[in-house]
Image (cartoon, rainbow, N blue to C red; front, side, top):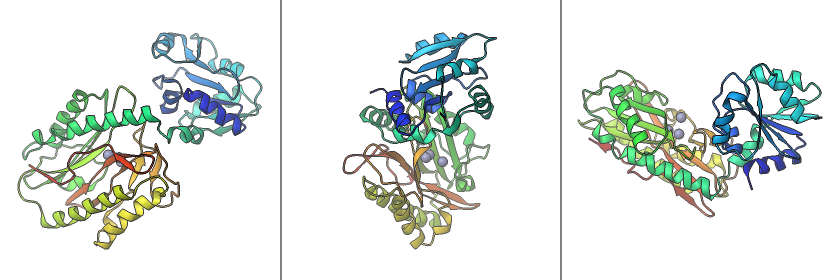
Length: 359
Ligand code: ZN
Ligand code: ZN
Ligand code: ZN
């Protein structure tokens, strides 16, 4: 069944008369159309019964057709009112579901064009579908994992004392494309003290001998599915003793989390079991973020692996396991794999060595 049909069934069950979805990951998931978020309105009109229509500006018709969408397309010309067209397609309605990432200006314009209807957020409805990956999606994530692993296997060629993080990052970005991605989504090269900032990207800092370097990288494959993996490198010299001790604890915590995660356990329990090991070793205050995030056509989506998320993991749920320990002003370490729940266990999609890679 096409994904839009599944969304249509959910919408009907929830009493939503129509879903309106503008460019973004939900539109891509429902139709396969990767539309740019431009000022002219593109919007999928998906009624809870009957056929959907993709409303596109006339000048983007060819792009929409070329993307192979399996729904009818209605175009609007430069001086037409696209909101009136959407309202026409929706017809009489009492509840309209809007995608979570719709621009506020569009939310208001749609409210004015369809004045009788309540607007509700429909992001969670689409997430209900996106959170469980089918076999094709798992295979796409598997290929993404293999591609980013190939990049990590080459990182040793580029990290060395005397080079800047930015230079290393540029080499990594090229390799992300060379190894099969169509876009570079992020390149984090956190050397020495910059490794203690989990979302540091790159800087002009010159890598020093003995620096631990956090390398967290990801891109999007032609399939639309994303990769994301973190490994840690030592740029020559000797490992700082305190770093080595913390790294051993982190390595063990991440291993235990991988052993624990499976269908039937809660998302928060995966976080908790690793956090306990890190806290018992005295580093609890230095693990400053959740354990992980879901991944699919977006790098960060549900399920979030975090305290308070009592969601029971199920077959097909894909997420990162990425505990970290951060010594402010000195260095940091994070080990990150993407994994997907199988029927009775966990398939880990990143499999380069997790030990500190000493160069
Ligand atoms: Zn992150
Ligand atoms: Zn991640
Ligand atoms: Zn990452």
